[in-house]
Length: 136
Image (cartoon, rainbow, N blue to C red; front, side, top):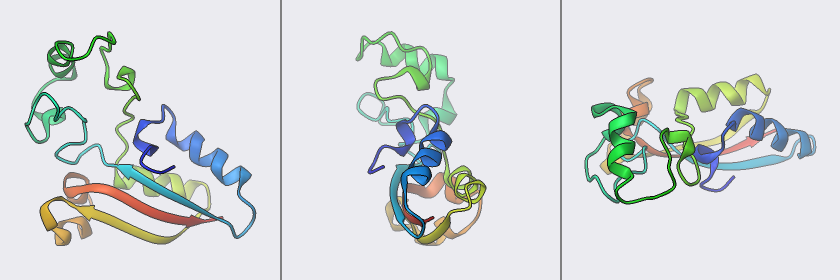
């Protein structure tokens, strides 16, 4: 799921299906943006405001977005490609619930602030991208 995990309507079900079709001992490579990151709402093409998804209501952000995009989206999940608001903790919960093993996990930091990606909950705000290899 290269660079797409944050766009699936139901990422848990997608990972569950990936697990189902992966042979025992096989690996799944996943990359995903992180909702809580400064640009997690994917709105930086019109609002160069980090964490816009937390500073303004969804309604406000999507009303401004409608000036630039005409898809009629009124929720983040409805935008072109969709956004499911998955973060680091939720990703790890999905992996655990599906009895997958994380073999490799890299939390790509915001502005080189690697130490902040190591702090639970804080890492939700300072991780741009999850890069993971999980084993069935």
